[in-house]
Length: 314
Image (tube, helix red, strand yellow):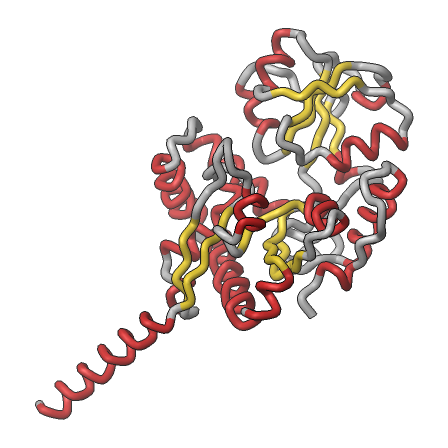
């Protein structure tokens, strides 16, 4: 009996010691709570971060403080960024390291109000987000000589339905479904998918400032591995994952609904599968970095080449 008590006390002591040593990390997704970040919520709720010896706090950005500003200020240590965003930030002088890549395909689309191909309509008014995420669209319009008139908007669907704009950018996992719910007719003719043409550049990845990464390499590795476990669990348990997502949505007071989040999760998981290998590779592809460099340099969105080596952790 004494031996059993000693064993229990030893286990309790070890658990307490691990908790005391747990590295505190603040993680900030680049947008408000939604299924786009489901794998990280799962990793938190299933205890994967804790098992990895990390005490992770998930803090979403606000209207007054973007994710990258939280990173710059040191209030957050890890964030998610689209590849083109990360490359621009590095070009501007802030070295970043990609520690995990979740997106293997581009989610950007252009939806035309008319039943016409958006890239056959020159000079039209196209809605874009006032907060960014549109680098590849700008590069494409320049390369195709479309002379679009870009209109920063807060609500893509409302302006498109009302006719205030002729077309809008949308993410295939988000605004695409909002437009559909608003009654916009979506066909192969009036929806241009960047991933189906010469603009399939990876999007979401997980990033750290390089200086912080160099000082916390093991923490970065453990965070990446635990996050990957979260995404893999989400693949096998989609409905339970939506339960978790909706808790974060409710806590963040985000206006949405379960069917929309279910559709978003399904599309996000589809975009994680590499078209060539048919697998979730969770890696940055050098050829897509080269493509992004070419497009963004030609579009004058990069002044210097940002190489694959500049982005990866090793």
